[in-house]
Every structure is written in structure tokens, then in C-alpha cells.
Length: 136
Image 1 (cartoon, rainbow, N blue to C red):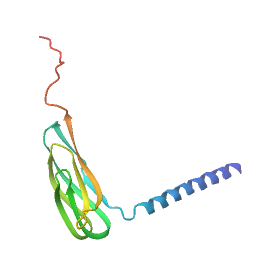
Image 2: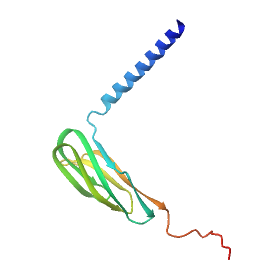
Image 3: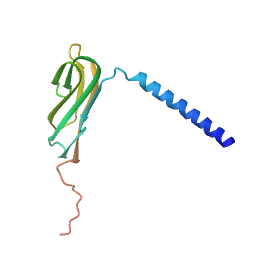
Image 4: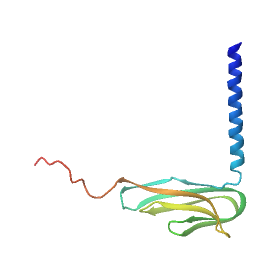
């Protein structure tokens, strides 16, 4: 009998926790824009080399409006949508460094969401290690 009471108490605590967690999340993100990029990382062979990759941006926002996807690293508008709540855009990414992107309201320039394409390298430099062993 005591075992069932302990189970019931644990269940009640778990249910209370889950209710609090779900309620908090439901109220915290109703008007938040979502901006995703796939893939998020571009890998070049060596540091300083240009990285080439086709990336796709997907965005969504609860309120229909005029929005633009902007590459803030290069200060370039990539694409704009009119009276939209979601959109998708693909392009050939080419860069030697990581780039930042934002979804903005077209008229005010307000930033709704941010993301980044990270450039990484397999090897950090072009020079070989000076500490190689030589037999002859």
C-alpha cells in the first residue's frame, strides 16, 4: 500500500513539472521567427581556402508581412518575400570565413531571427610541420 502512495506522489510531481514546462514554452515563443540553414557548416581542406557549398534557408513567422534574408557579413540582401509567413531560399555559398545571416522586416529593418554558416578546415595551415623526423 505504501509503495502505491509513493508511486502516486512521484507521478504527481512529474505531472506538475511537465505542466509548468509546457506552459512556459507555449507562452514564450508564439511570435518568434524561426530561421534555419542546412547545412550549417562548410568544410574546406585548408585554412584560407574558399569553401563551396549549396545552402538552403527555411524561415517561418506567425505574422504575414514583407521580409528579407540578409547576409550581414557581406551586407547583401539575398531575397525578399511579400505578404508571406514562410519562405525558402537556396544558393551556392562561397567564402573563406563564416557568414552571418538575418531575417528582417523589409520596411523597418527589425531583426526577427539570426543564423550562421560556419566555415571550418580539415587542416589549419598550408605549411608542413617543421618537427618531422628524418632518417637520412
